[in-house]
Length: 334
Image: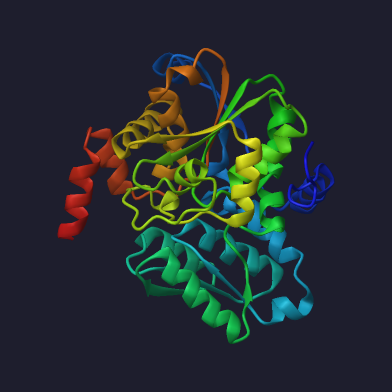
């Protein structure tokens, strides 16, 4: 039985869906014969890369900000992000009439930083790790800002779960849902929602081999912080998952599997060649898992394609069969 003091209820999720109606996009489920043939299964792509701001993050962060009191909004918000949550926060804050600061890594992806700034928010680079970024955000909270967590707040999780309501409505008959995960907000939300509607569904999370915070936490039985992360999937480069998201994932998710950065690049290229869609590495991780793990095939498999904020040079690199090592070396050389 689901413990509602931790898990978002269907009532919470439906309330978020009503608030998002006409604000967030109802993203389609895409199919393609060539994609099925390449993966060896029937693949249904929940196209969250078409969401406002280019990722699913808008759902949860808008839901959080719209529930803030007028006083909390008037103080302005601050969040922590390598990019997608920052874009979502900037977008949502603009719609809700709040100022927004985004604490980013010391070397953020230029495309994502520019998108945040174009939406009227301020970026604060200079933090070498996610731990340092959260510490900087806390300083700003101490100075009066309202903190919006990129993944570990109940309102954020309930907002992310709204994509599961759409999915059940769009495609009721499916067996497996595979989703990328970093801090765990999306995986926690959709797993709680699907367990309450289709409890027999197999739920699978995916992380890069070099950023496996949730996988390691599940192994140890408690939230475990990684010493370092190493992945070209910047949207999944998190050293520590959330306390709340871990509790939900531990309860509802069947397994969390790992993929290599080279496998992620293969999936990025496959999305372009089959759907003609530019899906960023974090968003392509779920498809990479289906390509790698045979036990995820042979069924009606939903993959969450979570974001589209992609460096076009990386897309070219993937289409030219470039490796992750080559990309990282080129980036290091500047």
